[in-house]
Amino acid sequence: MTAEESQTSIVVESVGGRARAAVLEGGAHLRPRLVELDGTHARIALVAVCATLLAGDHIRLTIAVGPGVTLELLEPSGTVAYDARGGRASWHTSVRLAENAGLLWRGAPFVVADGADVSRHTALDLHSGARALVAETVVLGRSGEQGGALRTSTHARYGGRDLLVEDVDLRHPATRADPGMLADARVLATTTLVGAEETTPRSHETRLPGPGALARALTREAHTVEAALNDTWNRWRGHVTTATVRG
Image 1 (cartoon, rainbow, N blue to C red):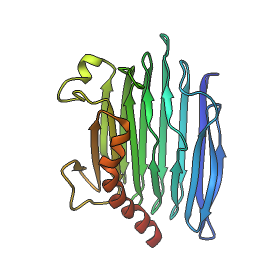
Image 2: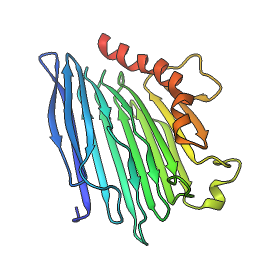
Image 3: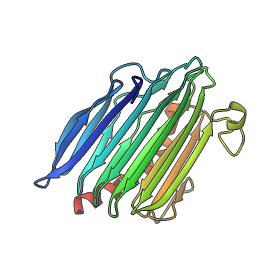
Image 4: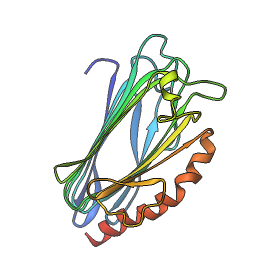
């Protein structure tokens, strides 16, 4: 690990039938803070401790949730990838869920300012019986900006099987303006459900090739995108909370 890399680790497990935060290890940029333990449910906030992301910042976040435990991650504030001035930054997240574990993570907006050059990668590895609901919002540019370069990828596995392998390249403004990409939108919001069947998907929701689904919304303004996927989040949230209560 170089001086610019920052490792943050979270491990939540069950002890005597109750959730326990076994590891809350913060890095130079991001620190986990325990908010609440309630039965088998743990709520943990991801708190930024400095301006993030700057050129040369490389955040690695690892999360492990033990059997029968539900982890809810909170982000009190969004993240801005600032002008890299020729440099690069990255944010890689790795999540492992044990049998009958659950994850709820409704991320705050990730803003890519002019001049930024950033990559994001999220890996979700779920044991059979686990369920995860993850929402993220990417905003290209602050007010009046076009937005910098972004490449974001997601790899979700369930029971050892790939359910979602996606690589979205938004580094070049001319390409991302194509109709098959963002067209005139600058906000991309995605909600991903892994480990549960969605039997009645809406028009903006797509079933995955296995237990899971994906919903996506494109808008011009960040404040409108949450409403576009709010119903999806509320319906799919029950798949996670109900399953882990039974587990």
